[in-house]
Length: 307
Ligand code: PMV
Image (cartoon, rainbow, N blue to C red):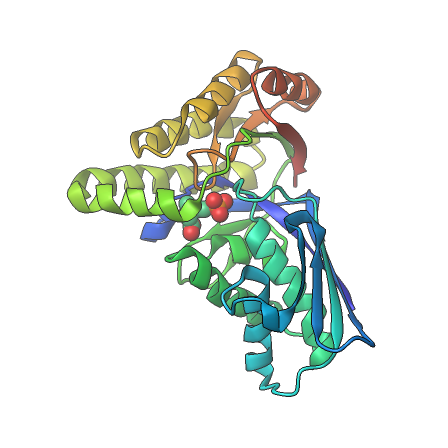
């Protein structure tokens, strides 16, 4: 059984989304995780994930290992105690720890490939709930945005704990993703924001409210076919993320470079401190903005058309 899952970017609202403000995220299908599960003559469940240099039998891995925990959770879900002999191949083109949702994508693809092999296919809702449980194991207090956009593979307007809202794009638009190459753990930036929020709650609540407004206006602009309005909103959202201390010199450098190269707006995307930034561009300028980002230090770029 084979399954795959896309990467994702957060367009607006990261961090504020942890505090129940709305955020917008879209799938990035140019990068993906692919999983294949087959019966094996070899005893045990053998997992091969060359991108993370993993070649191991399930029982030799700690139960909280990112891959093992998905398999164990699924067996628990189906109440399977006699585990079958399997070979699981995981390949991925999603950069790790870069804000592109690689962890959630591995979990989604693995659940989708493994569930029908050992029992029956799960609905999107079931996949989403299961993967959210896994995300909580690894990320502390995730909002659930990653698992949702990756499971449904559609643009989502996400509010923590509320039923999923997908939305349509009135007119397609182009985003260049630039990777600083600096690995950054979301759990750390989320923890730092929490400490700052506890210290200066009013100020941070005001920032989150401003971001909520940005997400709301952004959604309307996208749906009504005026994506060019997103540029200014991105700049504003980035300034608020800087104020929250989750940007970094590398991210700011790429954001400035993109703007100087003619991007309509730019911001960090995801947990921050490293990982990716995104820039809204006119389609004809995408390649040139991407090459300017590389000259400014980006380790890789992805040009993605949304809608
Ligand atoms: O770093 P990423 O792309 O997984 O995104 C994290 C988004 C945050 O809002 C910072 C955290 C969350 O759980 O929503």
